Length: 182
Length: 176
Image (cartoon, rainbow over all chains, first blue to last red; front, top):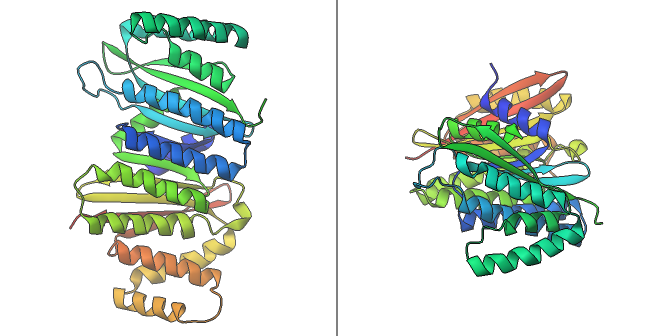
């Protein structure tokens, strides 16, 4: 029988994952993840511009996961997860967290909208969304997704997976950052 | 992307805190320790135990995982830390070539059978030499240190997949 170490190693190998963290996210954890990524990027020798992009995307995604790690009753039916992937030509930042079933359409529509825009349109959409979020003060305009797409300069990928809950699913989000600066 | 959920499940079920797959270059080992420190500092854990965990992780990432220079471009090692009853388990797996496998096979058998005093004596003997340490001596020092810090709670096994050898160490640090 395959040991847990083998199972984890095999998934990590297959996906080119270099870091997997599952558990509570707080500011200290976020900071140490960013430090790790910084060390990783320095060791890889990527351009400063790529480092900056990666850092910005990670901040946005880690903030996102910190905010959405609990379900509405502050319980944890499923742990959030953070995965850092290093491929030959790019890095992937992947997060997973619970999502209320009735929020899925709202969230996926926002991502689909962001993915449908070109960089210029995205810039304009960002301005508009900032203005709207200031007026409504809810920050629900999908600013985070727009920011991630703008900073990563790639389409966002997402997945929705069933978990053992009637009210929640598991939402995964992936941002890709190219190793070569555009 | 269901691997994210899959990883999350395996990690949660096994009480794993973190999984890293790398070659653990110098720069990264410091970050690895910071993440582990942040992760366990919220838990009521004696400073002696914390230091033992750190000591073991340092030996693992700096000497067990990264001494295979010919594989430096690959990410051939994996480090996992999990909570177990009354302690923590550090699991490390690293790819080793045939020559090192032969060397470690014998050494690990011997080392596991040694008393703590004998281990310390051997360690001191190696450390007192003025010559540059051989690869064998480096391996011995790292493994002896891990065994001493874990108070003998170090298990090992060799795995082989398609001609590739993988050394797995399981080190448990118990809360006294």
